[in-house]
Image (tube, rainbow, N blue to C red):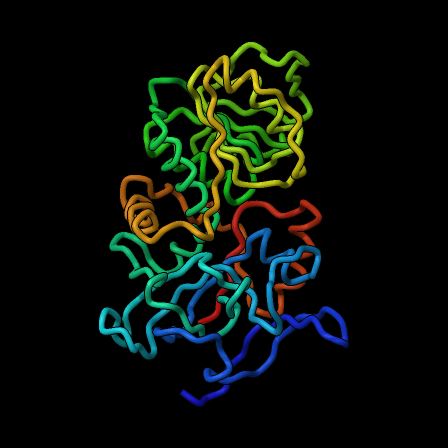
Length: 330
């Protein structure tokens, strides 16, 4: 395909760090087996860092942004995919080591190209995107480590962010009792509507200072890190799991070994970008079926086009975003 198309491309060279809409051709894209005409992508915190240069995300330049991608196969050298097939990809080097989903076309490696599961539309797959995949991977890892609903409630921090909202909904769908911690107390009703059975304002939290405090929750999905994560380690029930998947509150962790060697608490790292293919397939099957969040349209609070990306990035980095932002391409 030699037709030119639009892409949100990021540069870092003698002229400085810059990003914007450019025209390019398919032969300029990163190599791959499957050329996809994109319909949707999404905006994640990582995309905002990459698009503004406020985080070291990209490993080479220039490169198209966007860690999520969904659309229809335009060309394929792999017989497993044919023209017109609906597919998606999240992570897997997109907008890190290879051109991402902020373009009208993307080339994907077939080993990371996921056929759109029955039960999801392309739009729904990108409302989920990396955020939904990360939330589901958190629960998947917790269950692998023995977490069950009858142990008690699971608390979700950063609950009004994309991962947080989807985690609450997924936990509820999977039979767990989700609790929510957020700095946006005005959104309690929204979180309860998603499935949270209890909401706690971040300003009202007091963890205590002892290495172990009274246990409140059977587990946690933490998007915040820093002091929030340190506090959580002190209040999780014996043999509960904390899935850590974000660092909005900082990368440092000041805790002790006591929760781990006295209560058997497990801290599970959630690295969604590099998840093995067999686990990806299992998680997307859940997301299209028994873990599919209710009311995805409520979680998709904004839908934008290419030209609006810079303002969305700034809002997200300023902590002013709410829910999931969908990028409409097709």
